[in-house]
Image (cartoon, rainbow, N blue to C red; front, side, top):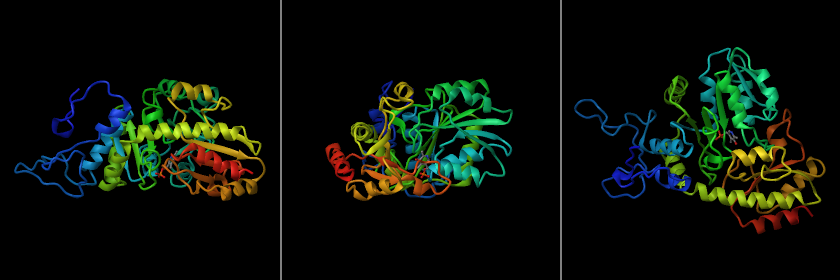
Length: 386
Ligand SMILES: *Cc1c(COP(=O)(O)O)cnc(C)c1O
């Protein structure tokens, strides 16, 4: 396989491991000043030569630019896909997939689909797409929902906020049999903990705002395809002509962040496992949802398809919403804020964020376990649960 990053400095050794890809695959250094890392390229437009060609490979920054190209190459390599597209948000990435299907198409999505996508499907696409929200963990019931106009099964695993695990390979058997698309929102797993394409997915989606960005300072989204095909070209068209693209600086930040992603994920996973075990043993806790716990309903599937279990933990506090909110107000290291995947720990009462139509239990707290020392995180919960 030909590869020449860093003006030929980097020679690809196959097969590279995740930590190596994360550091090297996004480095498209073309510099006359000897930069070791790729500079930020803010130009919106690029020079043509005497033949009218674009020797730098870029014409106009909405269509492509050096920092986005580096990010897209890096994401494709990390997810073991053919190509990636970066978007201005995770929502824009998902919406670009929904927009690629003809009106009247039927989509199967999880009953606990990320609420932003549920909102898109029920408002923006209410008149054009037909949707069934079903429990994708009940594999034996999924195929019965496939209809002649079904075009896609959209999976989200681990799911938000119940941390349900969907068996990607089992769903892939169904989508392959019916020749429909399998898309997987892999945001909670990041590109380090599971590879949906290797398990049979056609498209992987990430909110890069979360673990990929990892520092709560950039909004972004991405799609990665297993194959370049007609659907992918449609989605590329929606990205380039629709224009929901990230800025070069957003892409620069994401490439920079991905270099430490594999090591950040190791910390998130080990902290989350320790906190989940602690919470599971506490009298003030009704239940803990974490795919790494043996008590988790799909723990065996999680073990098969993930290399580790991620940094998200949901907990049901004994009592009502009031008891749960008391804990939120007593913890000191967990900032009460939405979002996830950053280096700082966050806590959120999901029901009040999702509103009155939410099916999330009212005593559920969603925790994004950060990279603080886990002893401090546990001590904080110890005092808050008293
Ligand atoms: C945050 C999130 C999204 C949406 O991404 P944005 O970057 O906020 O637009 C989609 N799916 C999941 C699982 C998420 O957590």
